Amino acid sequence: MTRYKLMAALTAGLLLVGGAQASALEQFKSFVSSTKAAKGEFTQHQVKGTNGDTPKAANNSSGTFVFARPGKFIWTYTKPYEQVLQADGDQLFIFDKDLNQVTTKKLGDALGSSPAAILFGSNDLEKNFTLSEGGTRDGLEWLKAVPKAKDTSFEQIAIGLKDGLPAAMELKDSFGQTSVLKFSKIEKNPALSATSFKFVVPKGADVFNN
Image (cartoon, rainbow, N blue to C red; front, side, top):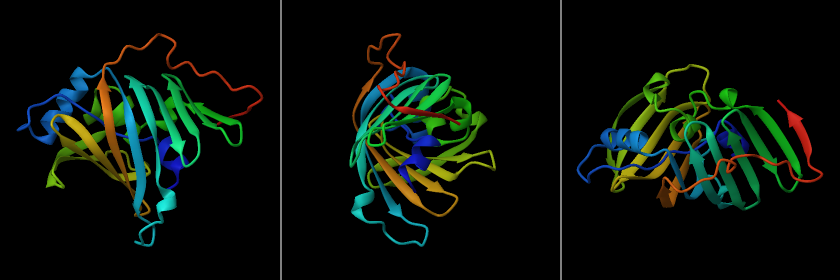
């Protein structure tokens, strides 16, 4: 699963407040209702390719994120190369530093029933996803989210939670590929300015509108 495909559909899943004994669904709903914004760090790697093989470590990446509901976020890849996906609530901007190139698109077209809708979208998750308990695995309580739309790129999304915080997210796409995001250093409801998510086109960058 390419980075562009994963994040332009856009990625990720996150934290919450909940008791240690709370189910994954209870914890996640508590998070959605109590968290208007958050920031943290992530790692991302592909664990299963289209042929069922294990991809090389070169597919691993990492970076930082910050978001404010609904639909505002900055998702920054710092390794192995720099790329920024930023949304201001209306437009999505994808900046490739090496190419000095910016691609823009309407945010609604990029979100929909994607992983990003869970993290960055509105609180009405059950409008676009069927949510259910996924059991306990690897020390985490798992929540399954299946997109209701048939034209989404993802068949299933799983969010692993521990101590009221999402620790991981698994993304299985329609081609059989599976990618995993792991989260750390999460801070809930940080102070953000009104201009935090305003995208400024880098000097000399080529801009393409989709």
